Image 1: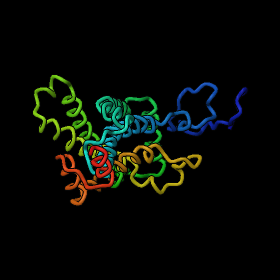
Image 2: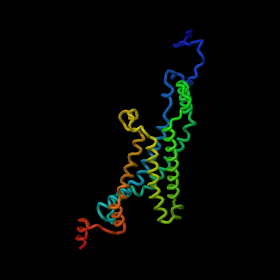
Image 3: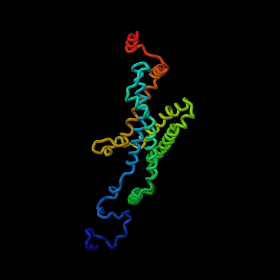
Length: 268
């Protein structure tokens, strides 16, 4: 053993070279490697958060409009001004959602090319050698990532289709039935895929106390809250008792409510 001058640590001359991956960190040599690397998964989840919220904001005004028509029993009563403006802005929200989804996909694809990932990969390999593990295969983790990536690709493909059909030159070439089917039916399917995509990313982290930093919910929990509310409300409106009534109202039927009676009396 010998102690070098100017150093605070002792080196062993007989010891072999260490295989612990290190890097030049300057004055930060006393810090752990993991603390010096930002978490790219959280950054990718941030794009997913914006994408999910903006996409849910596309279909939330339709849910509110259906509830408004059910409450008043007519389609001739004008929507509130804020709801009217919100419905006119659905295209912009949808395009923003596609933009954040594309950024989320690009950032996730660039994750393996980051130097921080290479350091983490070296650390994982060192830990595997240190624990004398010949196979690091984790079945549930592999299935989680396969399902996560597959749902993300399908959701992004449907979002791209929705974005393309929102272009005026493309939308004018479609019939109203085709445009409504793509934007409404396939839009809800895309919202469902993106929501399940975020849920699979969370996996079993919902019950992990360490995810709740400063008692605040993690990003994946915040990302799926509004889309789940929209999907649940849509499922309620698809029940026969509500669906039939909404269809009748939008065909011109008016419920015999007190509001309609008062308006008819005022006209007489």
